[in-house]
Image 1 (cartoon, rainbow, N blue to C red):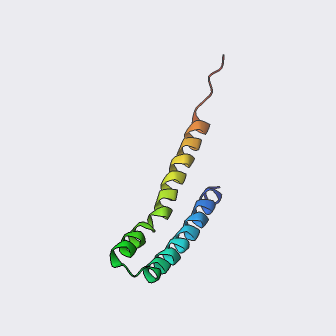
Image 2 (cartoon, helix red, strand yellow):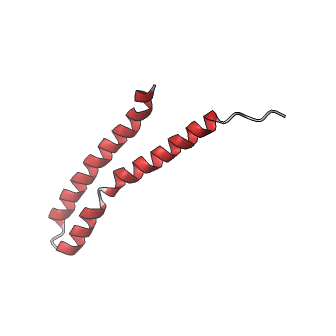
Image 3 (cartoon, one colour):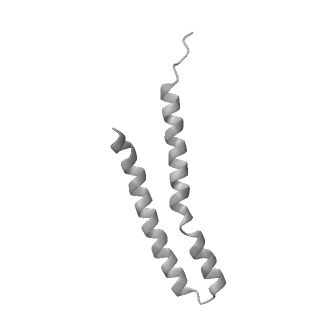
Length: 73
């Protein structure tokens, strides 16, 4: 079951990483201004990390909610 829980975030991470690499290469080629291109290229790879942080938090909250016993009235 652990493999199925990590498969989707891993796939999304791989896609985001590939997209940010392509974006970084395109930006570095498209913009001839070194400062702006360097800034954008440096910021682009932060998307996969941001997604993984959010996915880990979301999954942790789901797991915590599932582990919490419901109070009966």
